[in-house]
Image (cartoon, helix red, strand yellow):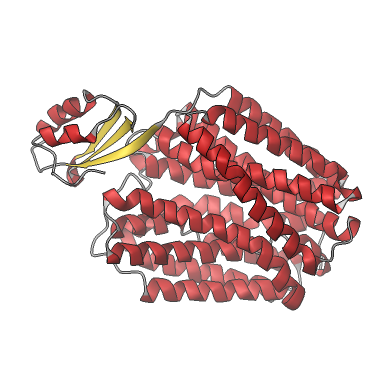
Length: 456
């Protein structure tokens, strides 16, 4: 990447991380600190935790489409202002209903798709994979940090302090977008990052992608439900004060992260992703079932959470990669838009329905709801064909007239390892889906319609 691209990528990754840090920081402490809010019940507290996911799910793709019309940065400013306003509203609240309104307003700043589109505007196609990987790492780190910072900030400044800190983070993100992120001269259509209406039907009818969308839905449903029950177990049944929860989460997250890395390598390098995926879902289900017995021992609770987050981190890292591989050529941005919507809807339902179960039948009801959801996901995953081992490859084409593109399409499809080709004529770009073990990009040099040195 050149200097401008590095600046753009790291700035946008930091905006992603700051925003997700604010959203996640509340999760490990909300059920403990929110109990004092006027009108609070387990059902309403659960709804408040997941409420941001509802507005995120509904507005994610519309924000992306609007950014094409009014500008990327303008929509990001609007989203961050909404996020900050929701944080301040929730921080000033004495009532659970006002907190819910604040959480919905936080989620209304649904700028993830706009940030990806801006990333597309500011990076070359050949650097796009690195850029997206950097953003993905920043999101993962922000989640891990939030589990440590949430209990620390909550123990000093309380629930309001966490929400106000989130508002400050939104202001910092606004400054970064305004002063650090470059302003692109034009919007670029990129299938890697931007949803497209024309491709939505194709993505929604793809059974492989729908299985993966269901997977991320269940994964975040379970994650949100976990934080309805586990913090109170730590404090009320195991005697660990909320201000000390940070070291528990820190030790779990660090060790579980390193434990899952070898399995990602095995799945990718040995082409064993289906058994690795199935094993991780089964492990997550068993660890979740183990929650019903953690009230007797802090050490046992640590072991259960170690295996829970080992499996969770493995799945969280693998599913976006699988979406990218399974998406039809030139549909990656649309596939990721549907995937993100499924993720946030899972977070919403995990909080809302999990909170209802907590109020009606208690902790065990939530735990077995989580186990049942994971069991259903395991069945879905086991019936899925083995994931492909393809990757996206972008070829920049020389300008030509319309009927010549048919010949280009045929020539590219005949190359060994090429499984799908989509040509975007107005962008003079071909999106290929290839098996890297059989695809030799050097063969592209023989084609006169390829811009030399522009493939990735």
